[in-house]
Length: 97
Image (cartoon, rainbow, N blue to C red; front, side, top):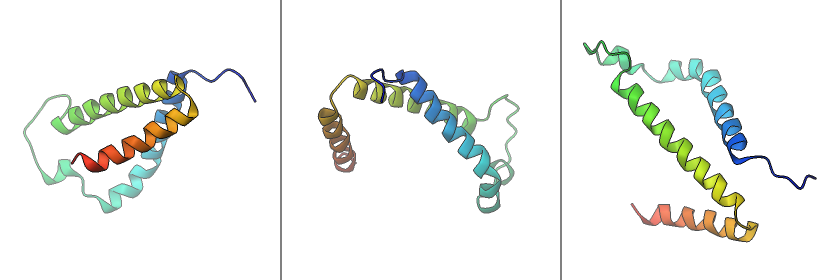
């Protein structure tokens, strides 16, 4: 058991890398079941990144910032308060829509 917790950014980057590896491994399997939208909807857009790729980058940026803020906030509080906040978030997300 260690007294020093690992840095928040290290945890967040490790979790993101695990997710990326999962996507890379699962993408060939997904291609069998999900049609490729670039083949279904032909566009004459010659830009470097398609609108869906830009949307994915934006979503990834917001997810990374939110996860980093969440992990950092939980590292600054006690385990009781952290558990309460996580459960409260679960309830609020169900109530808001």
